[in-house]
Every structure is written in structure tokens, then in C-alpha cells.
Image 1 (cartoon, helix red, strand yellow):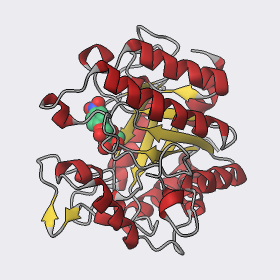
Image 2 (cartoon, helix red, strand yellow):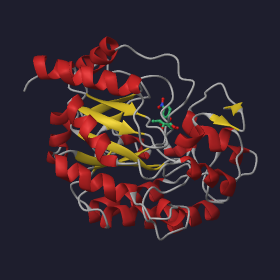
Image 3 (tube, helix red, strand yellow):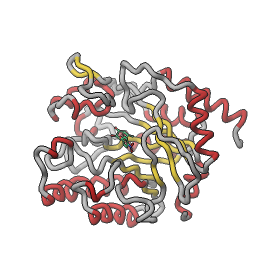
Image 4 (cartoon, protein in one colour):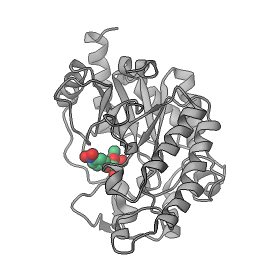
Length: 325
Ligand code: JFZ
């Protein structure tokens, strides 16, 4: 463990936010549900083979007068959470900030040139919440050479993949680490080891070095694709989705969890975990020196579903009465 991660292990409880174009689809495209057993709502672009340009039409479902990232921060505070991780770019490749790298970003696609990363960053600073950004580095469905699952049928060359890497990933990460003040953590998402993928170790090391160069205090999670065991310079380990801790570990770690099933908002969600089971997950992890990062999937207008906000407020109440403070 290094000093960088001290705030993280002290924090224990965080908020994950999956919000993006997919939030407007709510898990349904042209009357059809997600075409897959695993119906994560944020996968609709890929699962239902939506065209890149047509996907943007979902932006019309966002009422921009109502979208206010500060409300997410206020909810996190009330829940007793100490940090937030927002999907700055999920697998759909769409950037929630003003990216100059491509026009597949929120500022270029909205009238008032909104920049959700900037808005969230200033709200976090105002309320004393640490800021994390999720960046899908491995998977990108919008870039012609970004990885997606059909690449098993139409494989990319290493040169093409590196073109995606050098022309999109590296410059976008540079933007995020340069234009938004202090970033407390970057949350990458690659659930296999790099040796099983088109990504090379050199590319991952390049990315990690960029972070260390531009923001030496910024934490990096193990889903970068280098394992924490082989590369102790990764700051904390992310367990599998909804996988809780079972043992104390040598290094800082975290479980990402959902209140229901999907990460992005899905209108037909039915299996809600009880407040008690969420609290047990948090307490169990904390008892093993781990963290719990609980997801909210706001609606297109930014509203947090009642089923989620209610549970978060209940957890915050419990922590206030029974927690350390
Ligand atoms: C990934 C994403 O595909 C998903 O949309 C969401 O963002 C989630 C937090 O991360 O999905 C995963 C990643 C890792 C595992 C399972 C699903 N895993 O390690 O078990």
C-alpha cells in the first residue's frame, strides 16, 4: 500500500454512476428489449446493433433543463458516500465531456455545449466529495478500430488497434487529466488479463504512465488489465461485479454493486435488493478492510429512481446513527 490510496481506504463507501445516451433507451430499442440473456441496459448499442448515428437520436429524450449533476453529489453525501465514479466514457464510446478528439461527445451534440464531467467535478469540489472517472479503454463500439465482440468474426490488426489507442484513448485521457482539476481515481474496465486480448501490455503501461505523469496522486484500479499482483503500481483491486469480499487482502480493494441488475437505467427492473442486504454488503466489506461502490443509474433527465434514492437515504440514516461519525 502507498500513501496515494489512504483517502480511498478511509472512504469505504462510494457512488458509481452509469449515465449516458443509453439511459434514454431504458433497456428498450424500437419496442424490443435487449437482445441477450445479460440484459444490461447500458449494452443496448451493441446488443441491438444500433447504428452509431441513429444511437445519437436517443439524446432527444434528455431534458437538459433537468439534468443537474450536483443532485447526484448531494444524494451521495446524504448516503454517507465519500467518492463518486462517473462513466465519462462507457463502451458506447460517447464522451460525457467536451472532447476535441472526436465529435462523438456531449458538448458537440447538445445545444448548450454541456460538459457533464466539468459540472460533476465542480459539484464534487463544492461538497467535498472525491471524483473518479470511469473510462472504457479496451472496448469502444464507436471507433472503427475499437474492440467489440464481433471482432472475433472480423479481427482487427494490431496496427489498427494501436491507431484507436493513440488517436482516441491516449488523447482523451490527456483531456480528462488536464482540463478538470484534480481527478482522484480512474476506473478502467477490462475483465480479462491483457494476455488474452488484443491490447498489449505496452499500451496499458503507456496509459498508466500518462496518469502518473499528469496526476501523480490519481488512483488506478486493477481492471486496467494489469493484475495487482504482477503490477503493484496499480492502486486498488476491483472485484467482479456484485462480488463481495471474502478475505482480507494485502492491498486496497473494492466491490462494485448494483441495487437491482443493470448499471444503466432499465425501465423493467424488478429485482431490488433490500436496504438490509445492501447494508450487509457494505458492512461485510468494511469488516475486511474493503470498499463498496454502489451504483445509481439515473434516468435520462438525471433523476435517480425512487427505489435507489430511498435505499441510499436509509443507508445514510443508519450510518449516521451507527457509523463512526
Ligand atoms: C462491466 C461493463 O461491461 C458493465 O456495463 C458495467 O459498466 C460494469 C460495472 O462493468 O461489466 C463487467 C465487468 C466485469 C465483470 C462483470 C461485468 N466481472 O469481472 O465479473
